[in-house]
Image 1: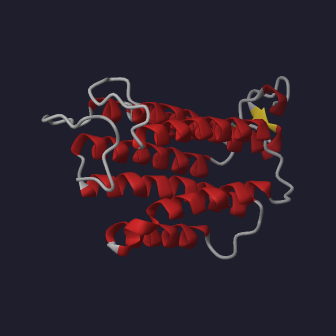
Image 2: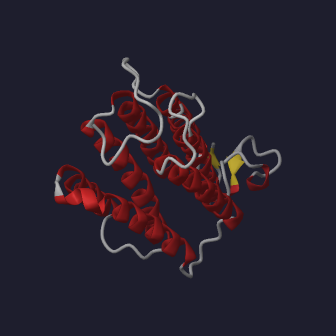
Length: 235
């Protein structure tokens, strides 16, 4: 069973052990797939598609965890959290020109460290501190002086939504707001709100690039779809 507990929702004796906490993850999976689909129109399609894939993986991992309530499912769920937040922190360093060495090597290292923490017995005590550290690193990267010009209102919105979600997560985990047999679960609300925060983060990074190629201000009237920033490349 999951460690240290399985949150408020009472486990059912069925294929889906926690229905509300399971099905609410479809919002995150759907968001990730939508970002992957939209990535082809972005100025940095590879980064956008990778982010979308990681978000979808996060939602699928959490879906599997709450459906099965197994150690394996919990590990995949937590791994998805590490990879999404760590990826964004590394991406911010890369775009600010402050990441020494290849991006892929750093991301592989993050995945390896995360796996060690998740599969080792001593690593259990490090799970939440590691996630908190990755979040702090992400915020620190975004607060560093840089020539980047993203719209920080999106970041503020994502942070505010995440704080609300985390408050609800804590109340559910501590059984302060808890109705085990109800379909209205605080942890399910956490899934929905964090999906919204992840969507706002995508908008934040997208604003740094000026959005999709099709934005009118990037076009020359009558150019049949030529983009000024790409020296006239057809988009």
